[in-house]
Length: 51
Image (spheres, rainbow, N blue to C red):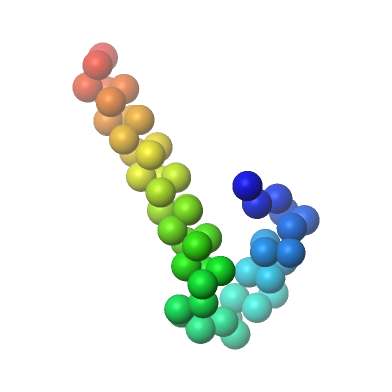
């Protein structure tokens, strides 16, 4: 879990433009965000299917 005060968030905030696209930290954050969005979408689909 990333908090707003964590170094990872500050790192993303201040050096986003300077980082290469293949930076492992960025990939990990992007992947976790994508997984979270995917899970939310699945929950919404299941919710509407069972209504």
